Image (cartoon, rainbow, N blue to C red):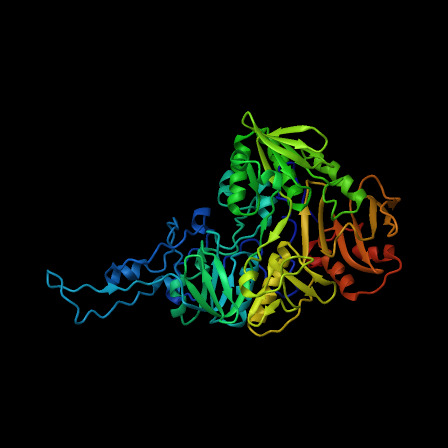
Length: 596
């Protein structure tokens, strides 16, 4: 049963739900389970901390240049090896790479110093290995689950991750959901999103990773991350990548998990420097921290976009406004929030629920002009109204990062975007793609590209398994979820698109065992409805060629197994009212009775 949720989130939205939703028996990390460091020796295990590192500990600065020859004693080298530069942690997360002394050169025959003594000189050592058996481009969730799968199947694997960010791999959903309902500022600073537990957005602590420059020399292998680096060229024939600093790395197997970048509106993009200073494209930890700070200092924030991210942020900021007094606007061209996902009647009803969360919703409006006036952003809307705001948050979609296609010869899908891969997530021999950037072949639903967190987990794990020889097709249907205040929480699976015909069954009320059906006629754009005014809970079926291709569970947690089985069966269902009974709409289902 979903615990009660207060206005400001005694329990953060989504906390009642298992974030993972992986296949039964698959590896999952619930919250922020600490993971034992890869390659730790027995002597170092006892010294490793099990506490969740602070944000400063989790954020890793780029490694400094190693162009200078440094003279050190062997003892000094032993004490300092493996400590990531840029980390301000006072706690030592030692791993095998952290206790190995760097080899010193043989100085026999070298000229003596004026004092007649010789010093052991450490040769210049690059922080970038010249070869990686497993090379992962991108440091997000898909990469994390890929290298977890690789290590599970190849325990001594040496995995190198190249990440443009200076953070360890982390989960994005709490950035737009749970963290905004966290009432403890210290937990927010540490990026801990659970109200009572130390659950962090980071998948694992520093202790899990090894120093990249030590990776080639570790007998037990490990996972090293190069932070603040970008691959600009991928030579698929030579199995080599070129980095933005001129470095080259060869590989045996390569995964592209570059994710995507938030889109901007041209009218905003071309509005000048002052507007750029007051515009936030929300995607990363840094974006969250900037917006969180803005909300402590400003009076008006306008969210542009009515999709998942825009609506979640609008509700989150609206709740924050109850404490700090900021006014929150939400603008989008559709008739209601989540109009591209929900049936029209449900979208309009949800819009009213968002308005009840201290959000001024402005539908059916596009931004025609943007200017800077008297210290504010002036938005000229299509209705002729000018809306003034201190900051704008643009949440209008994601553009997959596919720049490497130009140099690697990989194919981009013309319809969905993203790298085109087969059912095993493979783009070419020894190159796989996972996460937002992959356009994969779903053997049940056809070619698709999915931008949700759970897909990053599932596709990353599958790619990692296939990089070690599993040769498995994509068969598991990933899911997604959203929370828009205390009365709207839903999970969905499969193809959930409002352009498809839908059949929905809703409960009349929590104490009424009868149900009513709302049907969208496939021949009409209007919904033929006998549904109630309040949509407390129910199930929406999305249809294609008389088959159920998507299921949305409205305030019905812990029932995804049933939805997944319906999609897997692929059978025509004449009476979906009977199928809806499988979801026990009028019953309370706890987490132990279903896998959700």
